[in-house]
Length: 104
Image (cartoon, rainbow, N blue to C red; front, side, top):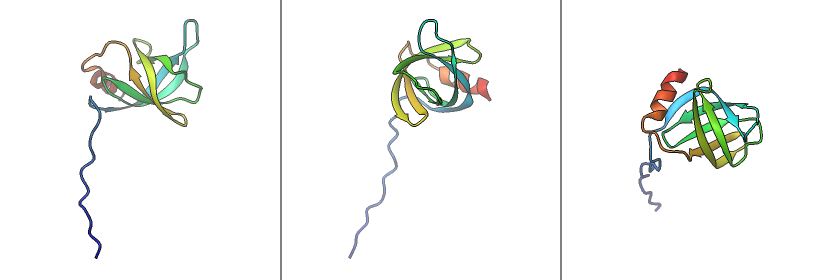
């Protein structure tokens, strides 16, 4: 006879809450480079998920809300044109909630 174990609830590994953002952003790849468009899917105080149809280097600057906010990022994972990046500049508590609210 087969025995089945109950599935455990998936373990949440994130250290900060993720917020749906669904809005445009821009990427800077270095001094003097032109900004490249991207689409932000979701954001947390510690990182971001975005979609970019250009080659993105391992470190870049993300410009948000018409260039008034900028965050330094490092790529954590890649899946086709989708990228997960962590913020490498100083953490800002409540940052993601403000940004996500402004994109709706």
